[in-house]
Image 1 (cartoon, rainbow over the protein chains, first blue to last red):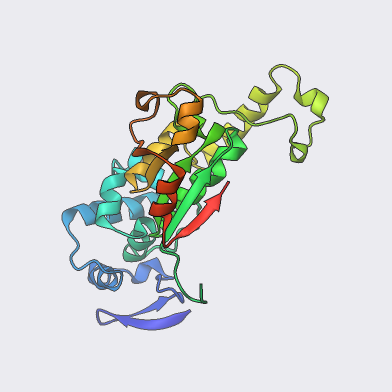
Image 2: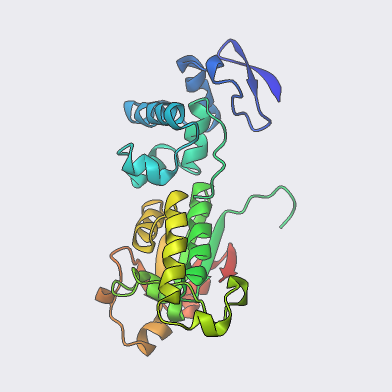
Length: 105
Length: 157
């Protein structure tokens, strides 16, 4: 674990750059984390995914799967991969200030 | 491949038609897309059941000739044993959010994975393009498969 300054805020992150304390997260940090994973601008559709991840994590205490994003979050898999290319769940989780997904599906 | 280098592309061959023959390849293919790795899925012999409309939702666990199941062969051969074991496993997979075969193929295709059938098997089983799921990209010769696998890793299951 390390301390890092993102968007002017000092936050705790894992070796791979995932926030370890969700209470340190805010939208300015999200914008910077998005740039870190190659997403220059967070659109409304990106936020829809981020909001669902956070809400679902809050309710169930674990990261939803891509299947759950489709079924419960109404986010088509194709769209998810278009929004967050090359590793959608990991990238979206990082931007949302959640831990790295630990599931194989 | 040197240390620290990322895998960019995998081509996974699924050759067996049992549940335990099909799922590992599907999970690896989906997991590759989730990690930003390009994926080709090549179905051959009975593995092709996974993308054949009539067969794909009737995939079963092998309870005979499968010592790891821990069921004696004679018991495993009893009517209904395979269905029983399959249902138990499917229930557990549903809990883990591992989708049924048809949904899994759709998910991998939506994720950008390519789905191919082996020409030799298609001819051997007298199948046509319309016997396969809509997600099928192409029926390929072995030569074409090697061609499109160039520069990546090939995994046989």
